[in-house]
Image 1 (cartoon, rainbow, N blue to C red):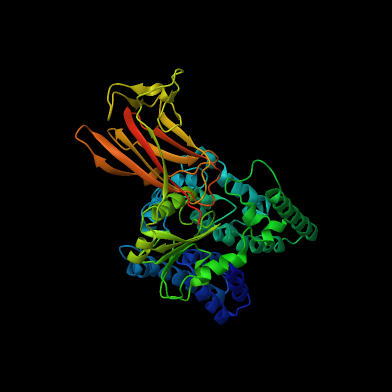
Image 2 (image 1 turned 135 degrees about the vertical axis):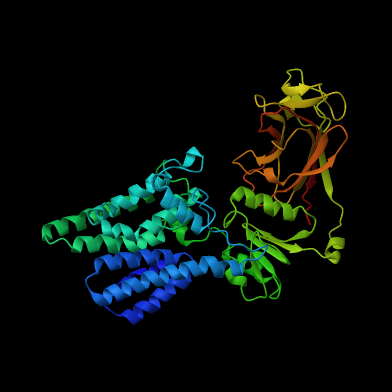
Length: 506
């Protein structure tokens, strides 16, 4: 919203409508906490462009002064005063520069070469994002950005935008597809055509207009077209406006609204970002995963996971479902609504349930040596690491090293939405690098970080446990359960036990 008003801000400035400009300026400042940094640079650009005109000069200096003063006020007074133990400002994600704006400014002044380097390199440590920053530069250079170098003063408009985007810790923010691109869209066309308008030769002006227009059209068609080397953050659901699916929801909108409307109007709700506007007129609404004292959780399970990534979102939601404190109020994919249980609900939910159990004690191995045999009727693969050095029960366990990191792998088939799994295993280890993993056999839907150490014995063995709920968007009908040692130390596992609660038909 602030970016959309920048063209109006510049227009009123150039037309000397300073009162209207001041109103737009105020709107921009209060729209977002960091916009004052951009307006300070805009003020500097205007000062350089109109230095000889007294009215423009005074107005430009005023913009710079109020922008800097407001920026300092926001980060040193307003945001700290709003912070609590559970609600802290978390959008300053520039660990390469420091812990706050002051440290970041100091770093950039004292380390200019290193700062410039950070505009171009992948600081995530993941090679998947090596070309993400360069892709952004290519796109905007082809769309006319090259003209900025012929009038360097226009580069001033983009310095804070590039810094905010490219120096951020999150690769998601470096791309052309998401975060902080709106500011460039708002200002680049203005800068490009102002530069062209300053050229006196009509033929050159016309040629540049054609070049910029053709370049922009080419990039638009190229980015929207089907190709293999798309950005890692590309989503047709969000971008492909030329397809019919862009204008039609991929779920039953009426049914979703009907389910949401069943939540009592006075109830406290934790919900996905696109759900919260529809339930806003109530005492409290939280953005999931913040739950606090919520009585209901209403989320889309396959989208709108911000601020969590999909894997962490799944594991967090799974923890609430399997905690025994929440019941499923509505499950209409992609919508899932949970209700906080009270004593009456808990009593009513204690109807008979059907269970299946699978177990592996590492004692018996198949004739080919590849599989553990189990009385529960399924195979547990990766049995070649069987060891008699330590055992929690019986004579054997499985030994995992950095060279042989995987063990006790089971594939559970015919898995359906609504089923719950209680999985436990005993581990003998020096650290937490060895994990109990649950995933589908299609895609990577992990619940790594949700296991709990529930018990320890005198011999150094500890019991790991995790509970998993199968949601409607589980990728396929199979579940893969396995042990994984991600560290360098040797680890032992024994007595893997899986309890499967079969979904009951009503």
